[in-house]
Length: 202
Image (cartoon, rainbow, N blue to C red; front, side):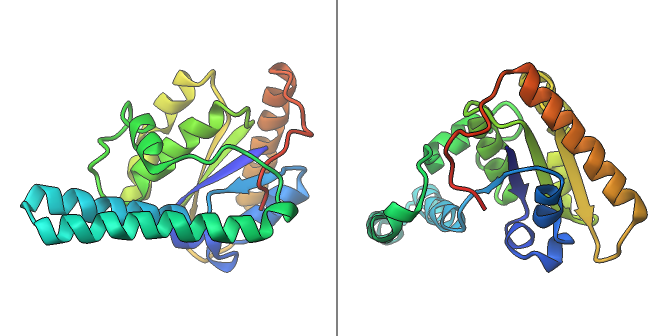
């Protein structure tokens, strides 16, 4: 089971990630990717936080209404398709931002807090590896890369792949993916993970 984290657009757009998810699945992975709604909840959280910092009462009230409405809509939508989905624990934004704290401050705006917090939460649910997608030379993505070794050490050396993609195909990419999947399979076996565990899968 491989968690896909990183730049929000790339992880949801197969072309922009070099079809990374399909390539991992062809090598035997089952991939999970955080829903796009996670970014919407995060944006509303930032709106609330910034309103508090500015002392903007109107913004504070609007952000709270927005957050409540988003959770209501998400619950309604999930309820309509619940019978078609396998269950897993959903990570709330507050939980994600707490889990990212050993690696980056929760008030850093952008992908790093979400990627690192989500990865930390998913490690506790017995994933076997993390693939971090980033645009080539992207500063927030490079920050995630910079702390990924610390993350691995803190989580029993879980396999971690930093995958910077610039639209050009590199013959070494397939070799890197094969090596990563070999590590993930070995990690899964060593930890006795059940490959039939239920998740929302990509």
